Amino acid sequence: MSEYRIHPDGVLGVLQKLQAPSETLSTNASLLPGIAESLAGACDDQADLATAINAFVSAQLQQSGVAGNHLAAASLGAQEATTVYVNAGYEMADGVQAAQNEALAAASDGDFDYFLAESE
Image 1 (cartoon, one colour):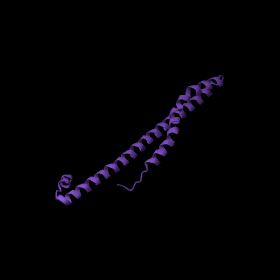
Image 2: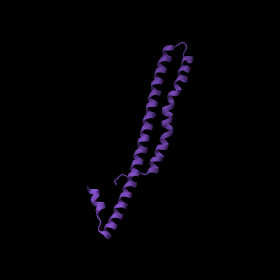
Image 3: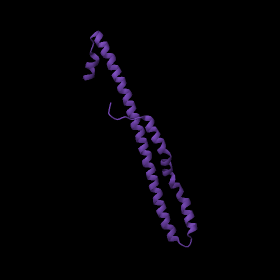
Image 4: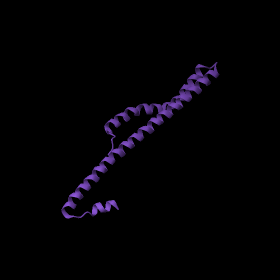
């Protein structure tokens, strides 16, 4: 089929290891209201500092969510590619088996229609 050697169990193991960090990164944005509230209380007399820190933390949490989404998308892509690769191997094996069966039958009865229909 190709020179690639995909081991579905290995792919699954890597994807499972990525799942928890991906979910954590994607949900970090839910921390923002609590952080903002804590900063507002801690910096009553320095509102500008609280605003600046809040903006920084907000931007970092947003990027964290983006990174989590990228990991999730990559994971889904890898799952789909592995599934397609494995299914293609099965389809090819089925096709080879069918061709072998038809070749054996053609050797006995001289009917090569299966092979002629394939080339048209």
